[in-house]
Length: 584
Image 1 (cartoon, rainbow, N blue to C red):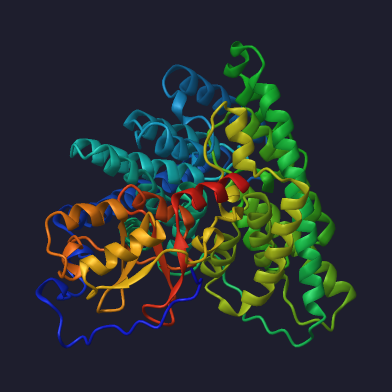
Image 2: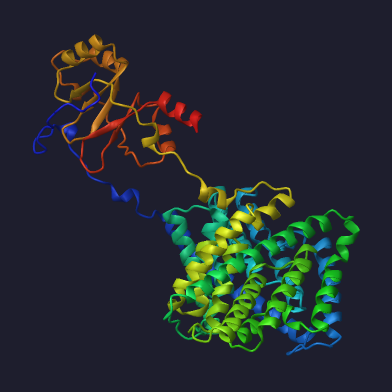
């Protein structure tokens, strides 16, 4: 049998038989149904609730900071030692006695809710996360509010879904929707929140899920901007690259960012499991000891490392520090964050990561201004790029890191150095630290959550990888049943393909032909033996696993050429697909 397609002319489209009439595409199948429209409305409601909670959360942090550390902390104040230590004792007691689910940053907890607990996050955990994180961050522990905001939003979504008695599938989907809302309000950056949830929480998306995530993120940001205004978090002048050699400086920033990411990952990966293996009684004072050590860093000269540090980032962008002091701030921030997070104090990693990146970028920018004054880059530009560099290298969210920098600055002229430096940092970090930090935490906690980075790096098989030459008989839909039966019997073929008048193909087994011959006359066109359901149209570029569900019904699957309607590229058989999977 030839592997090439014979020249079979399709019947004119103007004269189809009644069973050949094409009904066209049914757009009602993709139109939102009633429960899907309700799902979208609930997404907006969740976004509003999450936005209000996140705004309250940030206000609570600021009030606690003023009450415990004062409006402008400076070295030598004993409150810098007392506040994080005392609050550490309170937070540890709350976590151990009442809110065990509040421990950690919130990202892995949200992923666990999605993949293990069917989207369930108790409202008690939401309260605990709000209270303990606000206390710890406000009192100076080196943690940030963004990750807790993500879990708070996911918890609100979970509560709403449970109240409405939604299905398990819907309940599971609400966690990432709320997570996007919480993170968007905390960052005042909806695109970054959407990308992070897709990159690190769900890993993949459908149109319905994406629409809900977008609506929740936008509605939460609208609420946040109602209170905080529409101005971006940081303002820098437009970036003009007049000398291409300046990209070398941004490349150096990417290299240093990758190395700093490695240092942070190794420090957390080393200290956190060792503190968790200590007797349970030590959990009651580990946050207090960490708070005391962080307070010592602030007391003896570096109070800027306490808390999220957004004010210090802004000062660094405006050239307020010398490069040596900026490097010291970056190193002490890594140390303070490692102590705070490893002790089990509730709080996030986003703000510390941005802080370290901002200090590193500002240090390189300041150094450049001293030794290469002809370069046009500003310290603010390097500081902002540094934020993205650490985000890409440490948190391993490359797409989010780019858009995060653009959104927090509102300056798209910085896009080229951001992409260059972030890519270098990400690739260097992956080569030096193959396991992302959130996956490291997952393994330390004894969980098995999907690795989104591994999923992104997978090379899935496609239909073309299992494509077989065409060795089945080919007939026309108008050929007589008797003629087709003689052809199939002569070739001892287990199946054959029928070319239909509209250029599509129909696969039929020899057993189906025998059953049809018992009920139809010999001169009946073979098309009358075809059933209502048509053989699916497959193309070489489609994922191979998409074809598996069709084999119980069809003996073989024709694979078509996208550029030439009706032209066959080959066929798929179940044995061929299974053999290809065995080879991979």
